Length: 262
Image (cartoon, rainbow, N blue to C red; front, side, top):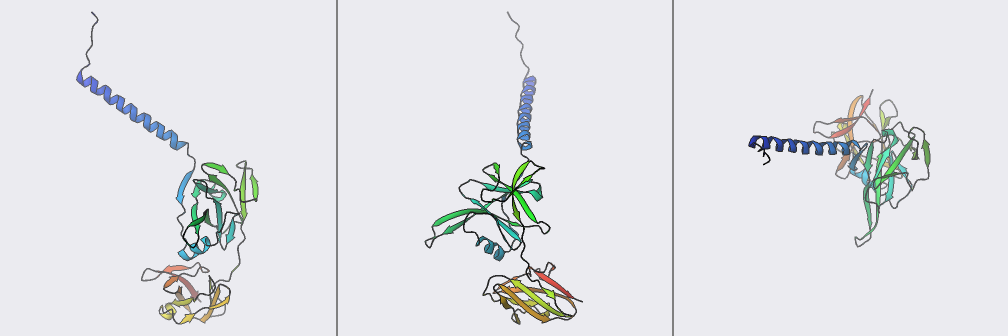
């Protein structure tokens, strides 16, 4: 008769634990291989830092899929909404991040959606003269089919879509004389834009800006020497001066523009 070897209870537990550890290690190795095969990070739909007025104004410019176009310091990219997902990666980021497009719908008077367009808004970095990019449509890298402007990139050995950066020169808030300041705001035509600040005790009813050209508002007032904090007002909303990069927080936690008269 063959000899039968019985496994002791503690030996069986040890073997079971080894098999469990081996299974966990295989799952961990598989996950590691999958993650290591993903060279790019896909980010969720665009989380904009634009104020709601600027953001809505830019979206209102989108009426169809077409070549990218520039509005002030922003480039608006569009794509056909028939795809499940559209992303964009830029050369100035070394194509390391895929930014996801959002969708804007156009509706008729009954609220029925008649057209959908994917879009992405890029705030162009100041030093750039051109932006080169590639789209990722449903996981496949491609040039922008709506943009005829392309260039060959020898570094990546790829053809890239490209957009020339053409910034519009607009007036900016500045001191025009010894103590005379010209305040400038650009927006939609027909607004009533008011100016308030520490020099009015934050009363925005004293100064109303004059529309000197369609959408361009200006106001010249004398200010004493020193540092002054101010904001523009449209109805109940207040916002900083976008032509002036100097900002600060007020004592009540608001963000205000700053100008100093020497």
